[in-house]
Amino acid sequence: AALLERHACDVLLNATDPRFVMPLFQAARTAGATYVDMAMSLSKPHPDRPYEECGVKLGDAQFEQAADWEKAGALALVGMGVEPGLSDVFARYAADELFDEIEEIGVRDGANLTVDGYDFAPSFSIWTTIEECLNPPVVYEKDRGWFTTAPFSEPEVFDFPEGIGPVECVNVEHEEVLLVPRWVDARRVTFKYGLGQEFVDTLKTLHLLGLDR
Image 1 (cartoon, rainbow, N blue to C red):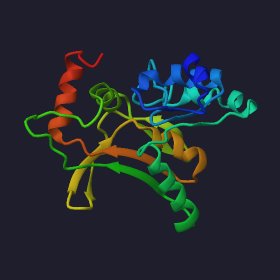
Image 2: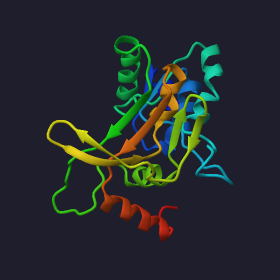
Image 3: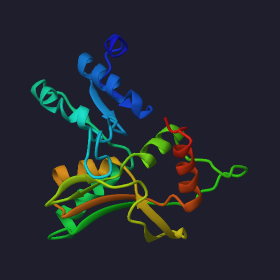
């Protein structure tokens, strides 16, 4: 907050690990700066029914302060990277311009990326990868609201364009499912990653050994 004030910053763009979202979110409000991030405040599984009910959802801590920001005339744009972010913009465009009604908005993330010399090499923060893949994934249904399932649930094969081809995708916790239903009318919203069986097995092993803590 002191740094923002010292340099009279108009905007704080948060591109850090999600663990730093709330301190930076609060700093922007304290300093009167506009806030933009690419990932939202962290979730906590339901203490008793983690694979059926939501506990603290992604972004809940930020949305709890929405009224304070609005009252101050301040602006915070949360989840504004590619996904979440651009994917949400595409969903809104589809709802406004392409369809009369929407059965499901499904975000699918898959690639054929390899890193030479490494059998296991996530393309971004390994901590975030482990956390979001092993957390209970959230699904939204209009007559049910938000609910959770077991990690890696509902596998489906999605045929990705640009030469990537068919990749098996599974449910993973991600911000779009918590953002899109707030502003776009859809019967169902999901997010699935194309992780690959080897990647899934590695994550399950980390969890089994307690190395995801």
